[in-house]
Image 1 (cartoon, rainbow, N blue to C red):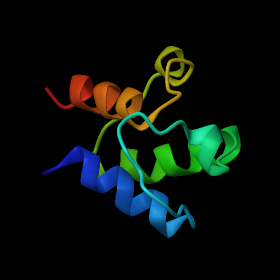
Image 2: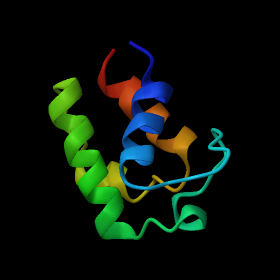
Image 3: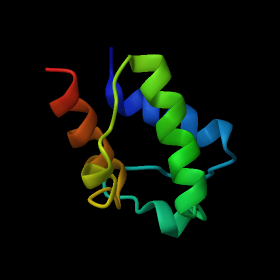
Length: 74
């Protein structure tokens, strides 16, 4: 499974447009903290993971989220 593609797919389902790269900040594409939490909840269910609260504060970019998910799926 490609984590990056799963994140991009979920972002596009939330209405994100444009070139979404690993360095894209969620705030720059109009996702507020509630939108981000909703997206993370969907990904948690889809990937059978749980993102701890302390990790949530670290997530600012797509790459940040990829790293957290990769760490949890080891």
